[in-house]
Structure formats: C-alpha cells, structure tokens
Length: 274
Length: 243
Image (cartoon, rainbow over all chains, first blue to last red; front, side, top):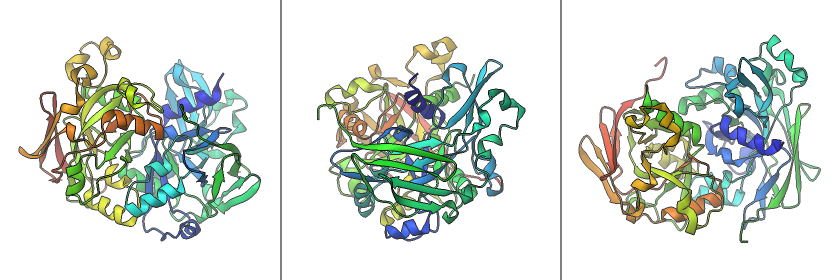
C-alpha cells in the first residue's frame, strides 16, 4: 500500500489550511534583523506544500538552497471560531469521524477504528514540521511589500510528521479511554519541549518551546478571531534561532527530544522538459 | 433543502485553496500607486473566507469599511502541476464571480512593514462567490452528474471577453473588461501550477479592474458578469461573542 502517497492525500482532505506564525521566538526574530512583534505575524501555506516523513524536499529552480525552520505544529481537532484563551486547549487534536472509504493512515492521524459503520480517525494534537523558506524570495517580497506566498508556499515546503502514540498498540483500548484527551496525552506540556534540527548530522537549531513569545492558547484564540479554524487545520508555532541553508544532496533530521524525529532528503526540483 | 449551503459545502469540500492574483489590471495597479508587475503577484486566501451568494460581508472590529474587488474566478477541474500554457484551458472546471474583499488599511500597513497580506485578505466572509442555482439540485441524484460551479466552461466560451461590474447601493463603482487582464488565464494556470500543485475545486482569483472603493455597514453590494451571472451581498459590522 502506498501509505506515503495515501498519507498525503488524506492530509489534504482533513485539513483546509496551514497558518504560520512568524517571529514567534525572540532570538529568531533578531537573527533575521526583525523587530519582535507586538502581535503574531500570520501567513498561510497551502496544504499542497505538505511532505510526508521520509520524503524529499525540492529546491525550485533556479535556487541553490532553502532555509529550514523547525517548528511545533498544533493540529486543530474541531471547528474553532472566537475561541477564548481559557478553553483553547480543548480545540487541539481529537476524534474525527469520516465516511468509511476515506480514512487512511496519514501523517496527522495515528490510529483508526471502525465502529457502527463509520470509521474514526484519531488526529494527533501536535506534530513536528519544517517551515521551509526560500529566504532570498522572502527578502525581495518584504522590501517590495509583497506577499510571502511564493517564498513559503511551494510544493514540499511543509515537511511534517505526527507524534506516535503507542497507546494504540491494541486498538481495542481506543474506546475504553477518553479519546479526546488521548491525542494530547503524549504531549502533556507543549511549553516544555525541546526542538532540534540537524543538517548532515550537524546541529543547526536547538531551542525550547518555552521561548515562544505568543503561547499556544493565545495563538488559537487570536487566529480563530481572524479566521475560522477547521478539523485538521495546522498552526505552525514558530522557530528557534539557527535557521540556515540546506542544499541539494544534504540530509535534514529534526525532532522533539524524546517524542518524535523525522528525516528528509533535499534535491533540486526537476521539471518536465528541463 | 438548503441548496445554497450545499453549494458552498461542496466547494469547501472539494477545493483546498484560493490563489489571488494581485495587480492584474494595469489601471487598478495604478489607482493604488503600485507598479505594474513583471510577474504575477500571488497571495493565498483560506477557504474559510468563502461567503455564499446572498450572504453578509462582515467588517471586522474596529474597521469602518472594506474595499470591494470584483474578479473573474477560475475553478480548477483536475490536478494541475507544471501545466504548459497550451493545454492550460483543459484544467479548468468552470468559472464563478467572486469578490476579493480587502481591509485596505491593514494591507497598507503590512506592505510598509514587509509583512504578509493574510489578515488584510483572509478573514471570514472576505471571499463572497457566486453559488449554484437552486433548481439544479431538485433531485439530489443530479448532484454528482453536474459540474458544481455555476458557470461551466460551455457557458463561458471566451473568458477574455467578459465584462465585470460592481455596484454599491445601485451606484456603479467598478466596470471593466477581462481583456484588460495583464496575465491571461492560460499563463496564470501555467505559472501558478509550477509553484504549487492545484487541485480540483481550487480557485484562482484573476484580478480586479479599477474603481475599488470602501463599502460600509448597511450598504448593499451587487456585482456580476454582464449577461452571465449576478450576485448580491449585504455588509455589516461583525459582532463578536461577549462584545
């Protein structure tokens, strides 16, 4: 079964958007010469930019490299609009009921179960993602006052992987537990995680999520007041300092210490006819 | 049966993104003091911003108005990646009439600060769009036999020769021919699909003619493609729970 391809297909069907939060770690804002923001800086990446764990990041012609940005991704579990901060954490991860034929294993879903002629998919509350960025394109866009879409939104620019949860070794246990809590049980304290990223085994980024300027409940509240968030929508919560170029032929590994790690290759994109 | 709601639901279930093309009519670029671009200016609007025909555009607090931008929307009919211009028209599922509602002051601040246009363009109800006529869904079995967009390709043999118009409270504000588009539809599909894969139901907003202006709460917006479709929307200030 082509699970990687199926994985990508289902991600597209589950989520409707990826909301990036820029400059959410003070030292990262500083390393790029940016002011620390008074409000979250929001941008969109299309779901076509997702890349499953193990895949190949493609550098578009004529660029020589892309910048990596390792981020904690928050996965929304139910429709969220004008959510108060106090209840924001209730909107993370959870249970999604889908028509029987549509549910397949994919990057954000760590378990599934058939029950009463419906298939239930369990959305991870969190994931590890890379916000790949064409830095020179972004710099030009910024000086010209133009959108960041081409710098951030190309295919393979959002490598992502969920956090595995071995509570699902026995699928029968699924309904014995409070399954709304479960997706988040592997990550009881998202403010105390360590993100890391290596290029060819050399550490480039390493930082604690406690350095986030705007915390997760605030982000969910703030973003949901601007746009409705749906099941499967993902928020990329920012990156610690240490962003650097990755070139063709290099390997990127990254993770959340003790929880998940991912790996991706990097190649130049070949276009039909080139 | 809430067929209008079904129409919006179908568009939401099938489409994954809205790609806006900025400054694609020379006179519109000029009216906002912008240079005419050498390449298409692309931005994203989330599908959460769709608003069905007849709905209410909501002005977010503390703004007093939004700018209207009437646009021809191209609906992608099948997965498109690295599509050559010569075959680009084969990837179109149909057309619609859309408004790219914009919080102009927020956009102006974002531009001076080099920040994204997301908050200026991407709020709920900021993409009013023409929906499916009710009588096509009298029999639900027809749902999947029909092209869900209001304007199938056959109804629009020449997308380069349409007239877009928009009125606020019965006063014409925008009126312009799609032949004034700088980057034509086949080029846009080719260019965009080389940057990001387009999927069935994805929508490209192809730009707006000059005449953008503010719409305030209490005003009514009507717009259309002459001879093909027209739409109407009310405009109100958004009320938030607890305000």
